[in-house]
Image (cartoon, helix red, strand yellow):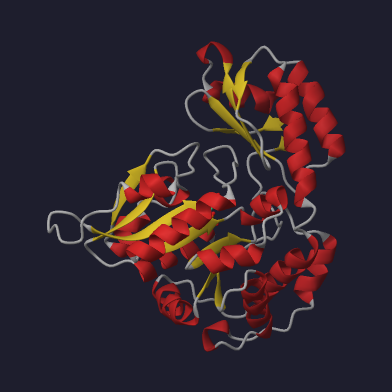
Length: 338
Ligand SMILES: *Cc1c(COP(=O)(O)O)cnc(C)c1O
């Protein structure tokens, strides 16, 4: 089976496993796991941020950030395709009692102008108080597209002027950094908090980090505890993260190359109507003749290919660490026989 359902399906490499088994550990709820402490420091330094907290999932890091930045009666501004809105079980309402303002961006990327037009008048008692803007980079539902950093600068300037907090769902931020060569420290400078996933392109079995100021991350530790996310000797998992930050970032360029090659092959096939432009490791294509994605994914499975339906007529492939050039060749041959 060629498994392109997600970049979360990767297994730790032998070298990563070795690093995991050798990790010194302690009780992280007491702040005594040396490997987790080292990972948090390393990730914060990478983005030039003050502090970080290791969590079981990216849903948890996003939800903690939203909880820290909002209060009941307030509103989060984000794109309608955002993971925080679509795929986190309604957590914004459930965990934070906050409202959401959904914008219609360009494949999920919103602009400073759009945000400006959707900030509520703080003196109008009818409206929730706008408090947080959340961006996603790369944008999953937008086909892994990347923000132009100039727009992020404009958004950050607006947020400072309007006293809004700015959060980044950076589940695939390393893909964006590799695709653009943007400086990670610029991200640290412009966002109040950043969530990054180790369990996606970086190939770790488990884990995400929330980065932010010392004050916010201290609050985050309290929220993580109440959500049941305080882990104990989880340094074994953090060691995979340290290994991945050292060895698995630059290789993301290979995933991007392979995704582009898949997209090129798809363009010529009769069952494809169109393919979203590929910027990173995600390929989303629309089926010709209003073909149904659930049926097509079933057909792919019979040909030894796993993918996910991503809309009624859309199918998603994600390239990752466990998908190599031989599999790519095999995939393209198989696609041609469908
Ligand atoms: C995967 C993902 C997350 C976090 O997902 P978890 O499975 O909870 O780790 C958050 N945002 C985006 C855009 C994602 O793709």
